[in-house]
Image (cartoon, rainbow, N blue to C red; front, side, top):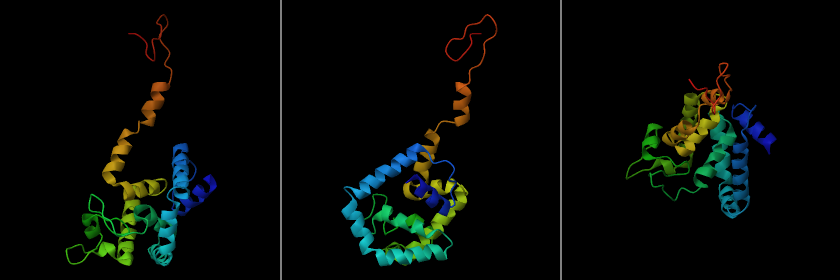
Length: 190
């Protein structure tokens, strides 16, 4: 599985030299879930959407994005545009009204282009491209995809929770004490 992740990340333009063990564990959990309790739901979604998925992959390719990114739609909506989130996100790509309008989709009482698979897929391509440009290339492609799924504020909160690796490394470096002073914990008494 790790080799397949390396191939997929390379296709997305992400750095492949380091895949954190936590990421692999999370992928394994999703695989177990999608092959276990959620299998009938996902199989139905993929089966019913085979033609739509082919079209979506073509749109991604036309937009010079990896066609496999089209599978995000399975995670976002399981190919169902029937439900809305509490935030008002709707359609296969789960756009909020604000994001949909920002990417050229009409959202009003009369028309909701978030429910048009082709138009929404083109808008999703633009949005994903902007996220990739905002977060740079390399491993940031994965960060861009996280922002698509979770939203910018939730990803920023998660990033802020991560400890600074330089501070963490510096605090673990043993500093010698001056002669005649005993070390207490990680510090020398003054």
